[in-house]
Image 1 (cartoon, rainbow, N blue to C red):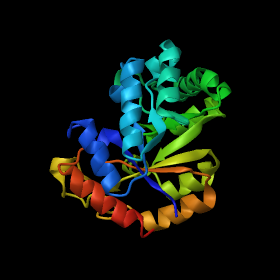
Image 2: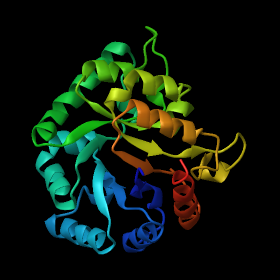
Image 3: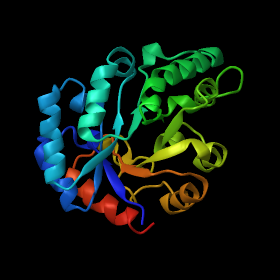
Image 4: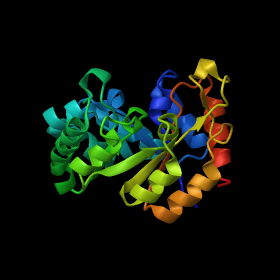
Length: 254
């Protein structure tokens, strides 16, 4: 059975981390995914303390999100984080709106930039790739999409596919799995509430309680990809215990 991880960004509004890790472990999760604000500024002692808490709860952190600035400008810090916390796969998670290219050539160049940033980490033995949102699937003037151009510019990049954001971007996730499945090394598993529901949670839902056809998607992902990590995410939950418990119960039926 595929194991299910927990993106700690989902719990950023429910401190302290020590309580979150206990909750996640209690609900049966075996691994968590880190994000920049959680660890980017920690010194070695702080990182070791975080690793000790993970170990104490029987959790690992095989994947992590690392911002482009940290990856490019502070590689020693990024590597200290990965080595101390046991990260195996590094995913660059986002590009703020005012830095996004406006045409195909710009996105192709960004793909090259990502690939160049990732080379040192790949050479050190890490999986390296991109994590999408919705903007990568908005059609450009030439008919292509930013996501296609990123991968064209960085052909060695892997992909942490956030399926719900693919859908929110207006794209067909099954078609993308078919075309780019070879690149998918991790998957964000989250759900979208029916139209008009869960407005106080930005329209997201607990896994299995929304509109995303996860049973069929998991089957497609297992058939077409070598994805090693499946990670729960919810961008704005109002009840972290509910999210954690209901989502893993649903996932374990797929």
